[in-house]
Length: 190
Image 1 (tube, rainbow, N blue to C red):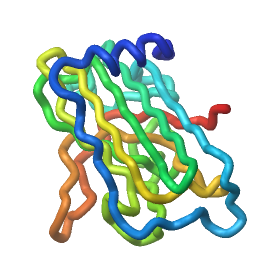
Image 2: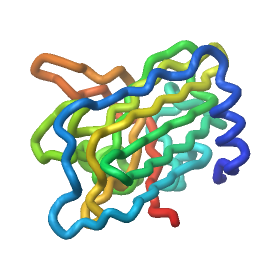
Image 3: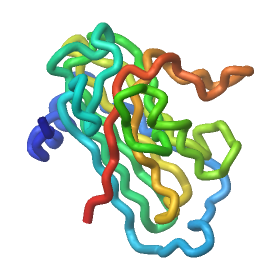
């Protein structure tokens, strides 16, 4: 089941509590990789998390209950990439990690591949897209990030993965966020 665009707008406007902070990834502003164009790139993925549809798939029903749904949108243009995530029906008052990954969602959690990195080998919010969020009392949450680089049309992220824990921001496990609990496949939109 796809989340209607109106529901996305309603979720964005009606999530209780203050808006999620914009996670600004600072760093040197870089243009697209060689061969990339300056045209806007838009990616989107949404739906109810089910055990069978890889457009929006659940891997852990304890952390992503039946009926939970999500919507992810990425827009890359004019030297920036903006990513947003809205979820509902997750566990209330709980912190989750979320990142863009290189491949589309699959039946198994690892099929989405590693985190998408703008600068290969750099594990940081400046090179990756980190969208950690905390749900409210109703299990709704949202997050957004802005990175100072554009996506390379030849190397687009394939999914947004929700993780069981918040992203570790330092130390030897930097960038990790626990098990993969759900996934939204991203598709290019016009």
